[in-house]
Image 1 (spheres, rainbow, N blue to C red):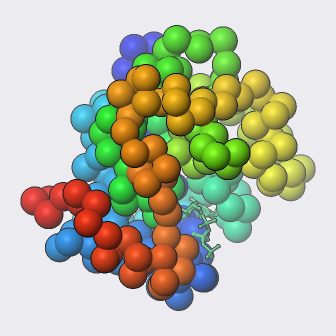
Image 2 (image 1 turned 135 degrees about the vertical axis):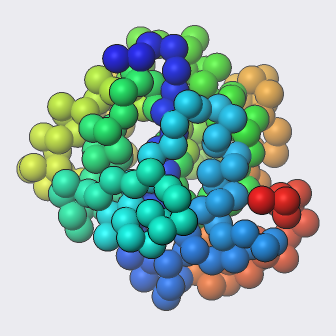
Length: 209
Ligand SMILES: Nc1nc2c(ncn2[C@@H]2O[C@H](COP(=O)(O)OP(=O)(O)OP(=O)(O)O)[C@@H](O)[C@H]2O)c(=O)[nH]1
């Protein structure tokens, strides 16, 4: 197990039922959303694994290193599980595929905080009281417990975080670690209206992918 390098995990195997089409493949500024997320994460990690669920063929065709869910139909925790199984690093950055405004500084900040809170098994932001479990860091040690939860169909992410020993980091702490506009960066898009809002936002989205 590699203790110094980090793996990046992108969860991208959901149904996108509220969006009505695969949200990872929607276009933003000339690139698909998945490419924006990848570009932000890549400098912070040595490898990116896409937890693709049923979309392995789609993402594989554009060159992503993909894994299928071992527990299909069980949501984001199933994606996290299959990607952690494929990871060979202790610490892993995780993000959902529908957060195209995350920047490299966010991932660097989470890494810094995880390295200084190493006794925890997960580090996730809590901004204005809202926890963002799908934009954080997870230690490989959570894997056996995660598998048990999936087998037992205990799929509630918040409950699981309480049990594994999660460190919730507030916006101020992230800012001190070099992350700016934390709330804006954590915006995600579940519906066509949210997609339009992000498309129309002057958010510094990269156009040179
Ligand atoms: N690998 C994997 N990823 C998932 C699964 N369910 C959700 N995700 C991902 O987890 C993140 C959050 O998912 P949601 O937005 O809650 O769910 P969704 O299925 O994508 O969208 P809705 O159908 O509208 O709820 C997204 O990046 C999804 O692609 C799953 O079963 N497997």
